Structure formats: C-alpha cells, structure tokens
Picture 1 (spheres, one colour):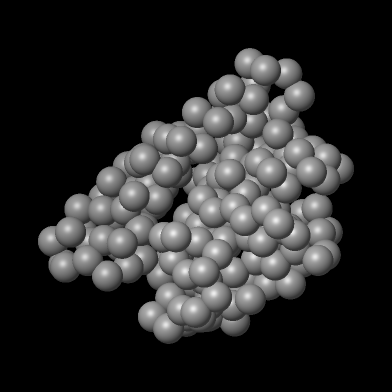
Picture 2 (cartoon, helix red, strand yellow):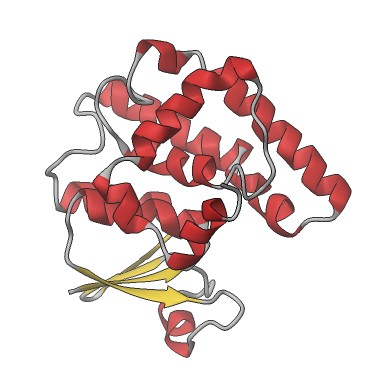
Length: 202
C-alpha cells in the first residue's frame, strides 16, 4: 500500500489528497503536524517536507511530481490531457500557480501584517484576472476535471481563512469554486483542520 505523509493544513498536501480520492486510490495517509514532524519523514525525504509519498521502493516529494505519477500509474480517470500541446499547457498553468500563488502561502499564513496584505492583494488580483474563463467552461482546462483543478481547489478553499475578498467581477471563479467543493473527492480530501477553515467564517 502507498503511504502519503500529508500536512493537516498544508495546501500542497491537500492537492495530492484530492488526486488520491478522485482516483479512489488505496493509500495510508499519515497526518503530519508540520511543527512536530515524525522522524521517518526525514528518513524518506532529505528536505523533511510534506507531502511525501512512499510506494514500495519509490519515494516521491513535490506535490506536482507526486500527482503526475499517480495519474500515470493509475490512469483512470485521467487527470491530464492526452495530447502533448494540452499537457504542456496544463503543466504551464501548474507552474504558474506555484510561482504566483502558492509562493504567497507563507505570507498569507504567517507573514507580518504588511507582507500578508501584499499577498492578499496579489492573490485577489490574480484570481480576478483568470475569472472570466469560467464563464465559458466548467473547469480550468475545459469541460474535464484535471490536475489543474486539483491545484486551484486548495487555494480557493482557503480564501476566507486568509481574509481574501474577491470583487464582484470575480463571481465566475467563485461559482467554479463551489463546483469543486461539491465533488465527492474534494469533500473526502478535507482534514478536520481544513474543514474548520471555512466553518469559522460562515
């Protein structure tokens, strides 16, 4: 059986958990408090970080690498496009999310007031810019759910928790977020700590 070391509130771990449940993969999920990491995590991963996946003799870290491995190892349902051009576009979007938005997570969660405010504005503006595409299509890559959606969902789930308010013109991406949150795989992916992120604000 695969084992995933997963942070209880870590958005990188969250997107891998979504993939696991989307594909209905049998996997032992070890919840990790990032402030008190188990010794074996450092033995598997030289960076001592989550998420880390162990599959027999294979150890993987970096959530996008783990997610693509899972998609290739268990190809149904497929979460990446089949054709090379669309796959390249999906990978580019994933890289952009990491560079533009996941890079803000530390400041949003634990930064000083000035850094957190700057990060909130950057995330708000970035999501507002891409919002119009969801007027025309169900998901980020079109009509099929993909790894790109798995990556966006944890960010959108945490907006209230991070005090990020989207403007009225971003309504399409908020409606898209509710479609993601309604999926069975997303509901199953949530830890108790992640469920509390929104229950406190509603």
